[in-house]
Every structure is written in C-alpha cells, then in structure tokens.
Length: 114
Image (tube, rainbow, N blue to C red; front, side, top):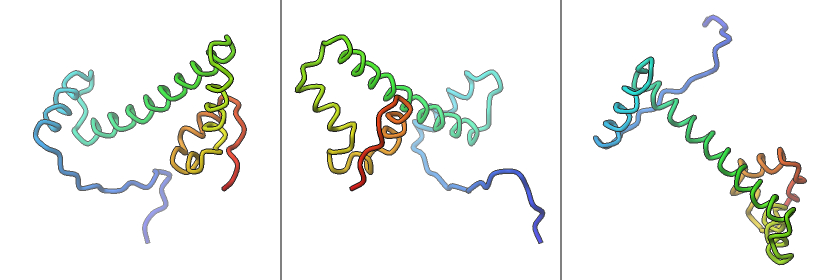
C-alpha cells in the first residue's frame, strides 16, 4: 500500500518542442538566479503566463469601468460592455471562465445561467 502524502498529485507530460523554443527556455533559465531545470523553468513560465493574462484582463476591465465612471463611454458602448460582462452574450461564461472569475472579484454579478 502506498504511503499517504500531503504533496499534490502530479502528472507526467511528454512534450515536444521545436529547437527554437527549447533555446528560448534555456536562455530564460540562464537569466534566473537559481538556474532552474528545464521542467521547472517551463512550469514557471506557464504559471507566469496564466497570471499575467489574468492581470491583463483585470486591468482592461478596470480601464473600461473607469472610462464609464468618467463619462467617456457612450451609453451604447457601456450597454454593450454590460451585455458581454453579464453573460447575455450566449457563450461568454462558458468560453471565458477565467474572465468571469475576474469580473466577480471586481464586483459584477454572476452571469445568468443558460
């Protein structure tokens, strides 16, 4: 019987990268103070990309909200923004779950169920 562990479950992925991408990862690794192994470097880069995308989306939404608050969006433009944000655009919540999570953090209501 396997010993119980508090470590999260991990999965082995067999990935193939073109040479230029391996070279980019290796160059990035060399710039890090701890020079991580390739696998660790790829984990860090993936996580960084995901977090940056979330931050970028949140920043974009804050700009839209600020523009509306300053009266710089027409009522038509703001209505369209609200329509997309609220999920009344048919596939929005399904296609953009991470964006919906950001919107919830910014105080928007849950998109309506389909």
